[in-house]
Image 1 (cartoon, rainbow, N blue to C red):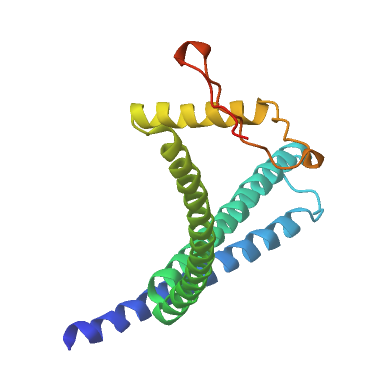
Image 2: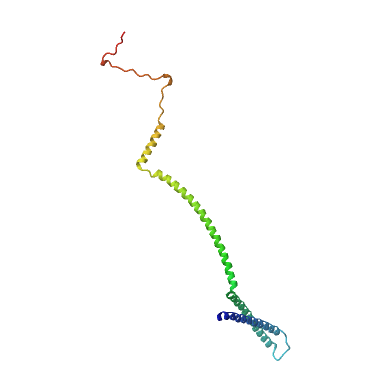
Length: 200
């Protein structure tokens, strides 16, 4: 509990120091600028010559201007410290920014996942079609090329015989007007004896 109470107190002390730095730097700028305006006023002649007075005023103006520049740089450093303090200690805003960024990245991841899923489905369909076409063509080529040697020669002979039968001329059929064919009479030779005699 003591540590939790010390943390806000350190923050408050740091903020008070920032506020004091801011007031001191602004007061320094205003004072130096006022003195520069006063130096520009022409005074009556004194014991110091005008040339010496002019050199003194010139040197004073340069010093006052340098003080104004230093105060401005201190204010810029104060702005940087305030930003750093806000970034390191404003936890609700930091958590809100982190949550918002996480939501954006999660939405982007879901969009990428959906696109990758759609692309995977399209590639799967195309790959399935390509595999089906490849295996169908390779199986037909394998059936033609992987035959045994005797079967290949047998199919070659069948193809040759079929080609010869188609190339042979057609035979001439007998004319239908000649009537049925008569059986031929047997021929007897004279050496075997006399032929048959006709009885009256």
